[in-house]
Length: 147
Image (cartoon, rainbow, N blue to C red):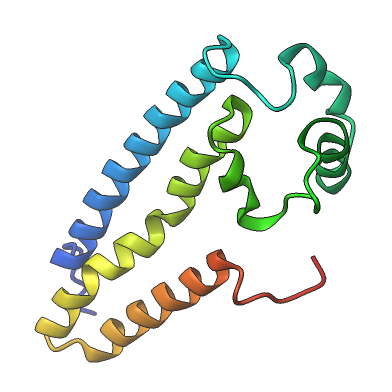
């Protein structure tokens, strides 16, 4: 018979608490930014009445089309280039998505000190490395594959 401990560690609780708060903040921000876009409170790159004509397009083709017709930028916006257009209602909607995508990084970084303080060096090191890898991947510096 094994002695299984079903109690959450302090780090697990901290991770869950931070994850919940960031998720709720991101979700609330998603509703707010979508309302700003939908109600026309903020100007959009693509007029709301024209957006349905682009729904059939793959992402790359959509970006190329809106660049050609509305943005007139030197290059099609990819990666973090959407930040240049965050003042437009349709691109502002990307902000809460980026926040939600980054919550895991914040949670890992938050639990690292507690893991090392407890003497759990292996998990502390793994959490730190995971946060670094996720940050590099999100930054675009760590790119793998042909996309």
